[in-house]
Image: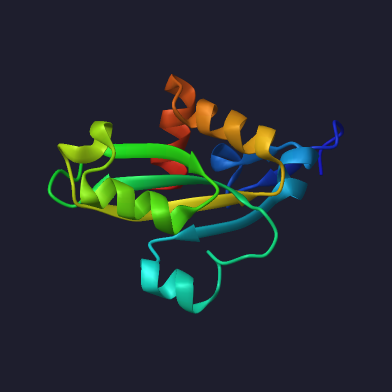
Length: 130
């Protein structure tokens, strides 16, 4: 914990990440490279409580292509991307789920998605999640 009340995370000082308490408290789940079947098996996608999910997909045919999105129904959105229902991602399908982050607070999830799409957020994404 720093003097400002932020939590420091990381294995070395030069790779440390500062997390505001409000973000670290609302960050509910972080998963990497789980198949859709595994998520269903663990009931992660079938929560009774409404969850707000920021997700990152990579194209199986074009590994340098990423998609960052926000949803409350991850299973449906992945199916949409892989069936061609999403115009933006249709060209590079099929897609694979790389990472998803679950928030209780919808506004924070939307802000985090917007951040990941920014220049510094995309650099953070490549360094930490891909």
